[in-house]
Amino acid sequence: MNAVGSTPLLELRGVRCVLGGQPVLNELNLQVRRGERVAVIGPNGAGKSTLFHAISGLRPLRAGSVWLDGRRIDRLAPAQIARAGVGRSFQTPQVFAQLSVADNLRCALLARGGGNWLKRRAADTAIEQDTAGWLRALRLAEVSHLQARQIDDARLRALELGLALAGQAPLLLLDEPTAGMSREQAGQMVELTRQVCAGRTLLLIEHDLDTVFRLATRVVVLHQGRVLADGMPQEVRADPQVQAVYLGMGT
Ligand SMILES: Nc1ncnc2c1ncn2[C@@H]1O[C@H](COP(=O)(O)OP(=O)(O)O)[C@@H](O)[C@H]1O
Ligand SMILES: [Mg+2]
Image (cartoon, rainbow, N blue to C red; front, side, top):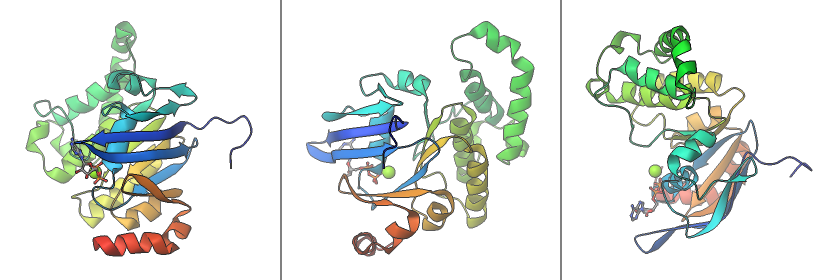
């Protein structure tokens, strides 16, 4: 499958993570090419969030390595990995609870400029315009002045998704972006993610199979810290092993 000379944007080689004495990721190998939208699915406890933590530097590897565009990143600190081009959201939204919704977005937009403060000051007007644009796209304009801790769960998730998307990271990791949303809200998020992720590479943990099949170009099934299946959405859906795991978990 590897085109000669093309480096995957993300590659995990033999990744092993041990938590509480138990192996949570086991010799995990995964390659993601530029422009792919890969859904990671699997039962609770399969290791999906740990996979994202391992990529973003929040969990140490016991063995193996993680590569971003040919550069080894698994020994970098989380902030360095973010600057290297890995944006993410969390299963439990991580926002600045005391800041307003608009200020949260301003922070994400300011962080795009890297360390050059003067350049960012000069971009002041652009940041205000971008903030307004994001507030509209996320349907958060009417709560823009509220502190993030005052908004409901679905809006909080929309805000967190916006914080991940508003950065310029070429690789985005979204951990259950539509959890707790109504069908309608989830549908809006799928559309927004699709628009904003054009030209980016997406790794998405998602339980809702409708969302998976609407967004993903490829599906990876994790089970007990290993890749159980990896392929086109239709192939994976038809895989008897995958069906057995999903029936087993009652989803
Ligand atoms: N900090 C931790 N300490 C010990 N065990 C953990 C920790 N975090 C997760 N685990 C265990 O690792 C396994 C995988 O967890 P996780 O990656 O959160 O799964 P998923 O996101 O697929 O539901 C689970 O069995 C979970 O109990
Ligand atoms: Mg999880």
